[in-house]
Length: 209
Image 1 (cartoon, rainbow, N blue to C red):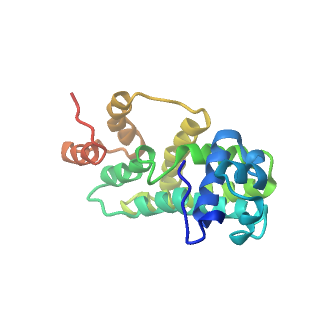
Image 2 (image 1 turned 30 degrees about the vertical axis):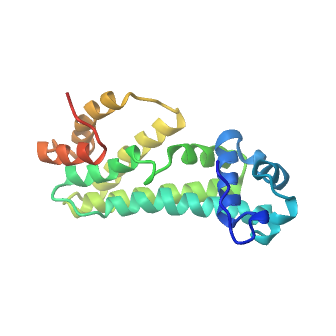
């Protein structure tokens, strides 16, 4: 990765240190996110770290904040996006699973792995799960589902995707796109209209055969 620079390039930048921590977390887990290895990675002095973070704990907290704001924040945002139908609303949520700028699946996997060894991070993950499922439930209720049906549909939608991430399941993009209308029908009880699918496919640069 390229090191972001500031006016004092010899000590790097806040974002540069955070990006290095992110890369290390994804590559080797939280135990690799330590100041000296990060300094070597960035070709900077260890002491330059302290211009931007008080200690390692503050850096780890910044990683969790980034994960929370991106992954949880965008699921909530997409669940609240304008849609003409429940099927289209679900396609808005599905944008998260196909656009890394909205939802970073590798980051999600790394944080969930981290949670296996940290009660505090496990609590963060559980809170995020609850927030995300509540947002999806509100989406279903917005389109007429009662509270119980909305809760079950939200849990089904969300937990299947977390299963994909936890199992590190990989799908060819054409196969995934082919399956999406059926997923939408199962999760929402509605068959998506062709114009809704066309808009979804276009957002992701996909052209069906």
